[in-house]
Image (cartoon, rainbow, N blue to C red):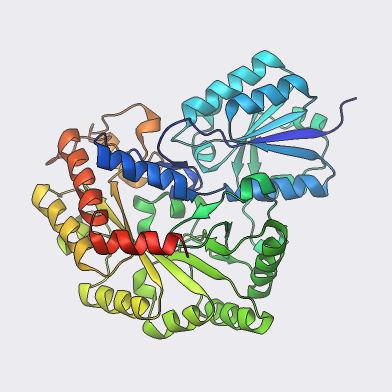
Amino acid sequence: MRNKHALLINALPNTPTSTNKDLNGGYGTSDHIGKNLLSRAIGYAKKRNIKIPILCMGYISSILNEKKIKNSYFENCKNAISFLQKNDVNCCIIYGSIVCCELENKLINQIKEIDNQVIIIVVGTYPTKYPEKFSNADHVIIGEPEQFFLNWDGDFSSLNSMGSQIKSEIIKDLDILPIPNYPTNFSKRFSYRPMLKKPTGFIESTRGCPYSCGFYCTYGENQGKLIRSYSPEKVVNMMKNLMKKNGFRSFQFRDPVFGLKKEFIEKFCLEIHKKGLKVEWGMETRIDILNIEIIRLMASAGLKSINIGIETPNEEIAKANKRIICKEDKQRELIEAAHDVGVRINAFYIIGLEQDNEQSSLDTINYSLSLKTFMARFAICTPYPGTGFYEVLKKEGRISEDNLEKYNQQELVYEHKNLNQKKIKNLIQKAYIKYYFRPKVLFNIIKNKFE
C-alpha cells in the first residue's frame, strides 16, 4: 500500500520569455514580444521580474495537507519526471492552459509511459471549457477544482468511479477556502517587480465579474457574473499569515475587478489599520469604478500599484468591439491623483481591435506616452476559444491559427481586416520600445527595483 503522495505540476516551457498561466482568466499569457535586440531585452526583463503562481494550486496543496496527503510542487517537467521515477506517487494534478497545452499533454503521456497506475487529474479554466483537449488524462475537473477537493474523501481509489469529467460547483463563500500553501523554495521567487517589492504573495478577495466583457474576456466567461467574496477580516488575516510563513513583502490581488463592493474596500482598509499591518499591495480594476477619495483611502492602507485596462483611446473602435472605455478626462484625472499619492499605474492596451488600422494603433501608442503611468502592457487582440468574439470570427471563417499555444496575446490568430501578422508584430515592438526606452521611465523602474 503506497503512502498517499500527490504531485502538483505547473509545467512551464524553457524559453527566454515569461509564461504566467494564472493570467488571462487562467488561460495564461506568454510575452514573446519580438525578435529584435530591444524586444528580447524587454521579454527577458519580464521573465526575471514577473513570476506569478497559480492560485488554485496553492489552495489544492492546503486542502491536501488537511487531508494528510503529502504533496510536492514542480514547474520543471524533467524534475517532475525524475521525482516520479524515484518515488511512489499516487496522483499527478496538472494545471491545464491554452498557452502550454502541448507541453502539458506531452507531460501526461510521459507520466503514463512511466507508470500507468498514477492517476492524472487536469484542472484549470481552459480544460473546464475544453476537456477534450486533455483526453489522455484520467480525469478533468470541470469548474472550480477547490470545491471538488474540499468535498473529496481523500481516497484515490474512489476516483475510479467518477468518470473522466468530474463536475465541481462554484464556491459561493470564499471564506471556506484555506490559506494557500506555497513551498518556500518557490515562493521566495514570486515577484511583481518593479510594481511591488519582492517577494510578492498572490491572493484574491473576490471572484466573478458582472460586466458584459464576457464577449471577449475569459475572466467573466469562466468565473461567472456572481460576485463572491472573502470577508475583509479573513483577507487581512491571510496576509499576516503568509507574511510570517513565506516572508512576503507585498501582495498582488488576483481579482478580475478589485473593489466591486465599495463597502469591502472601506472595511478592508480599516482592518489593515486596525491590525497595524505594514505591507504594500496592488490590484487590478476598472478605472471607471475609482474616484480620488477611494484612491487616497487605499493608498493610506498600503496600496502601491493599480492595473487598469485602457485598451484604446478611440471611442468608435471601442464601441465596435463591445467595449466600454472611460472618458479621457477622467482617465487623466484619476491617473494624476494616483501619481500624486505614490500609487503606480500599469496600463493595458490592445493593438489590432476590429476596425483598428496602422494609424489608430499609432494613436494608441502615442496616447500611452502621454499619461503618467509607471508601466504599460501592449497585447494583440486575441479571440479566445469559449468567448463570443471567437465564435463570431469562427462563423465568419476568419480564425487563421489552429496552434492553440499561439493564443498568447502576442500573435495575430485571426484574419484582421486592416493589419497583417508582420505589421501588427512591428506595432507591438514599436509600442514597447517607445514606451520603455525613455530616460524617465527607465530611471523610475531601476530606482524602484532597488528600493
